[in-house]
Image (cartoon, rainbow, N blue to C red; front, side, top):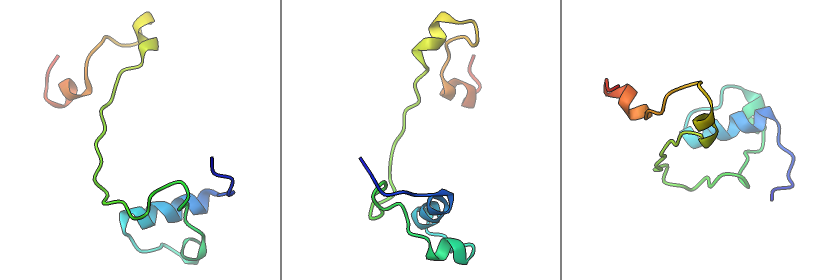
Length: 75
């Protein structure tokens, strides 16, 4: 649990730090980054596997298919 209060400028500052970009103005340059929430020393390598919500199984919103099928022209 993190008890430090952050705001939108803190989030923007953190994104800039994580991406290694310059601060866009003095507001973000002097704002405290959300270091308690993110590991600022991370290598930046990560993986992510998207999974369809099980709630969709009971609806007619979308048929079951994977995102990679859309990317590779399947379905």
